[in-house]
Length: 250
Image 1 (tube, rainbow, N blue to C red):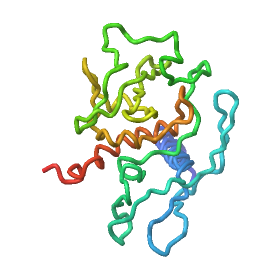
Image 2: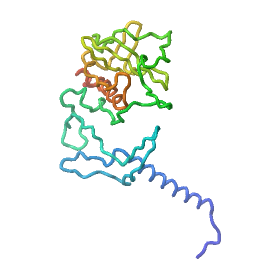
Image 3: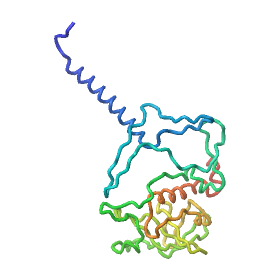
C-alpha cells in the first residue's frame, strides 16, 4: 500500500533521532582516542578492554609551529608505586614507601608533553621575572622575593628567590624557593601559597618535604610534564604530608 501523503513533521523527527544517535556514537568513539585500550585490574586477566564502540583509527593533529602528533590510543605508562588493599577489582591503592612520590591518589599526575607551554607568539609562556624584563610586580602588592617560606609545621623551608609569571595571563604561577641549607631551588605553585606582609605559608606540606619537590631541567623554563609533577606533589601533601590527614575528618 502506498501512502498518499507524507507527514513532514514525523519525517523530520525521525531524521533528528538518526542524526542525534549518530552524533552520540561519534562523540563516544572520539572520546577513546587516549587511554584506550583500558587495562583491567582483574587477576590473571590480560585482555584489553575496548568497550563499545571500539576506539577510532589513528588521527594526525597539526600543532602550532608545524609539529604533527599522531594519536592512536595509548596506555598510561605511569605505574603508581602502590598496592591494592584488597583482592577485588577496583580496590583502593595503598602507597608503598614514601606516599609523596608514589604518583597515586591526590599525588597522581598526567603524562603531558615534556616541553614548555608557549604563547601565541611562540615564546616560552611561564618564566621567572629575571628572564622577562618587560614584566614586573604591581607596586601595591607585596613583593615575595626575599621573604621566608614556611610549611604547615611552621618551620622555615627557604627563601623566595624569584617569582615566575605567565606571559599570556599576566599572573604569577610559581614561587622559586632557595632551600635552607642547600644550593637547590624548587618551584612552589602559587595556588598552594598564602602570602602575608612578612612570610609565605604553604599548608600542603611540612618544611622537610620541600627537598623532595620534583626538579626542573631548565632553570628559566618549566615543561608541561614538570608542571603536573610539581602540582601533584603538593596536592599529595594535603593527604600524605602528615599521618593525621589520612584519618576521617569526623
